[in-house]
Length: 63
Image 1: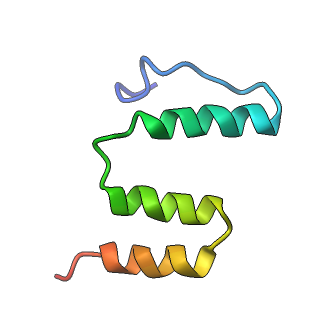
Image 2: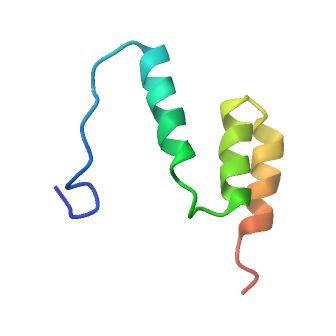
């Protein structure tokens, strides 16, 4: 296990709804992530794939 995940609990069980809720709770704590990245994640979660891809293209480096 790498140092990034060393303290992270493993949650392999539970229903899909429980796992989704856990993921949403984790996202709330990711305040250091760029809001545009979080928005792209939210769009994907909502099934808005074309909008998410478009937003991700805006986040790509220009060089």
